[in-house]
Length: 69
Image 1: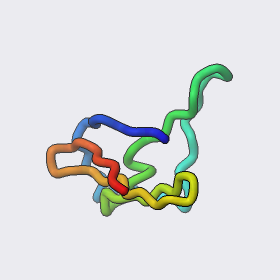
Image 2: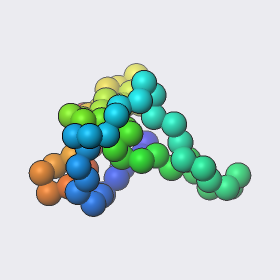
Image 3: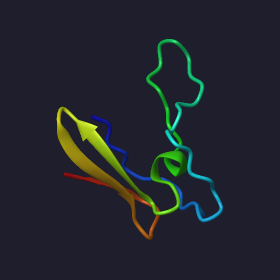
Image 4: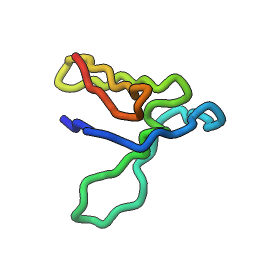
């Protein structure tokens, strides 16, 4: 499971939401890296399924990320 602690506040109102967030380029040994704006979209919320459980990832007004079950 990936847990993000914080991110810089971003203006996502004008950011198009892709059908599926694609990982950014990384080296073969590094874990994939995703841009939070792509994951969260304009609404600032994404749902993640992990081992059959659904989690909500959302951005706060302060720009931090919260992952809840």
